[in-house]
Length: 527
Image (tube, rainbow, N blue to C red; front, side, top):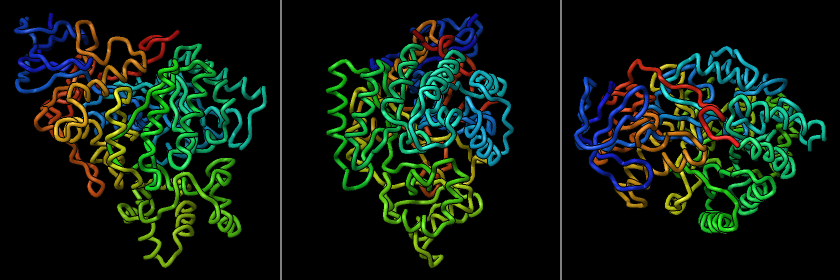
């Protein structure tokens, strides 16, 4: 018996094909039929006339690893039409954890008032399943997390024994469901790893049929070298490669994405299985600690804060360049838990108000907050965003944590991409500016991403596929979140269906919690 019929909409099936008028019937969590005038068969009927019915959006680059333990609705992601969050990005994951990795994770969880109940990757996946989030979740293993488990925060190459332990821990985690490895090569301790180490780890990823994602080592002056390093990792290991949030940061580097995308396309033509993802904004978001050179971070957050108390360390830092630069007027505080009044102000402004030098002010702010001060960094070109978005092999990811306009996740002024990424592509870039077609925008959020993850029966609207669906108004859909007022849901996303259940109905969160943790092997393709 059919459970639900979406009646009268236009199906945009995720493959890049143009929309077509069709009903969609859902039964037992899957799409039962797609076609005109489907029988109701006692099912609930939703009138979706003048709406698009698409596969649920897949956020290939999320940082929602612990968000579901605070807010099981994963509100900001759900309201964007997301039905799967891919976590564990930029070198850090919530599992496996031991040693320094355990200490660093517990420090973060304490800020969220969450109690950790896991150590292994399998235990983490089970913990997510117990929460029963509103949408699905999967995760990479963070390269920095592996290093922290095995080597602590040491700034050196691993010994043969340490590399073997990391490979074994990665293999075990992938056997327990991890989808691959993600590096964060500007963030210690992942930044301390070299190309040989990463290629050796990615050989495990290839053997297990997973994906290697990388926040590359430099997105500014050395962008091309950093892209080439990760292409080389793919060539040596045979692993499939995903270049995270591709961009050129810093005004003097604007335009370099033309060269970097040409470099990627040449590698693709020569057989390297490489793609990239992107968020549709000209500002990034990270931690204020990126303004501090890598060597200061050795040994972990507590050691960094200890070093920053030393005036001689601060003086040495002043003379050293960092990958993100220090254009203080472009670095805006997003979250600082002891100083909520800082949110929305740039570092130069705050330092001037305090009568301090911006670097000195930043060091003090990091010490006071145990290294955890979030920033929004205005550093990119709109022309570059459009150029990257138009590439057929680039998919869409938010690079954000799921937030909410209430409760602990409503704190501060985080990057608006948490609430606006997918509607912004559909509305501004597809409908309004024509950077890409609507059907291609949907493809980049669905089947293109699903193919990278080797997802089974997701990312398309077709019979027997999982009924992870989004219903939206193509004429109205747009983001409303801004840098000054980020905790705002988009408009035009009407319904979100996860495994056949309505998680968002008429723009309102329901009590349905049908998400689950998707595992390599069981839900995603392996070797």
